[in-house]
Amino acid sequence: MNYKKFAPYDDEARNTVYNRLFCDNPKLFEAEFRDGEAKVFDPVPKKRALREIIQDSSRDLKMRLLASNVLRKAGGRIRRR
Image 1 (cartoon, rainbow, N blue to C red):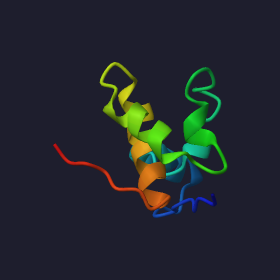
Image 2 (image 1 turned 30 degrees about the horizontal axis):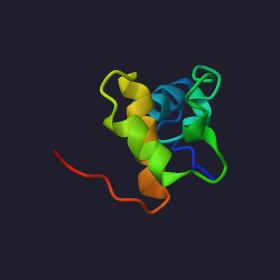
Image 3 (image 1 turned 90 degrees about the horizontal axis):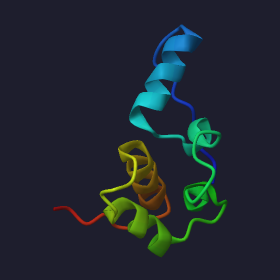
Image 4 (image 1 turned 90 degrees about the vertical axis):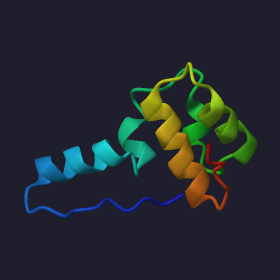
């Protein structure tokens, strides 16, 4: 999947913080989550695996948000609580 890097500011450092804050681009986090979280970084995301990550409250919140954004971009639905 291709991810667009948003650049709302003239400063590259601020743009990087912005993009990491909203977790829109999983590639920015790939180095942080290798073991057991690789499903989020698959070129062809598996919706079921992403839903499992999203629903697991013991996982890192950032990883759950990344999985949610990847699932949404892949056309999957997010169940609201």
